[in-house]
Length: 278
Image (cartoon, rainbow, N blue to C red; front, side, top):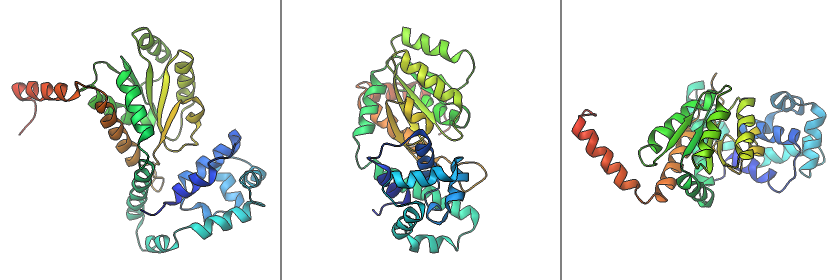
């Protein structure tokens, strides 16, 4: 399976100690990986919300003489045949193709299953299991919690912010929680970052599904699992984060010995109640 532009960018950034501003640039580049080789330093600075000199310093930190050398390198490794083909697609098709590329990227990341398996063990062992997702990520958290509750004995959905969220984390910790799962998607609310910092201070291990390894929540996560979002439409698309959530469910089930029995019990009750139309 060929590398995607996002995978190549991730590889380029690995092993470098980046400042918070440089991580912001890297995060923006990963999100718009197919466009970055054709952006000027000024355009990239505007995309990342930083100054143009910050982009130059970022390129130097990666080992290049300056941003032109970095852009030249990116153009040399860009899949030009694919970009030419996409020129014949309309804007809706391009959005779908971008999501397909994000899923390919996720498949490449999952070639090493160890991080997901580790996350599955952490989620399965936490009783209760708080699941956090605010604003754009609320639906991701709800979907995970809905299915997780069928196999996990105590799932607690945190999908509304406000002053009560710290109280709910405290209650989960008192009840025995050891891990919190977070879904974090752009635009990243400050409240999510603050809540994850609070959860870690309370003793919870934070597992986060985010749109890139350079997302703002990375600094307050113990285990971050990246899944890119699509940015070609007015509102971001999040097929890859949703699929990664289902993969995490599978990994969690693998570490819950009674998961299958719970599912069968649910199916029996559902049939008795006539819950679903056959």
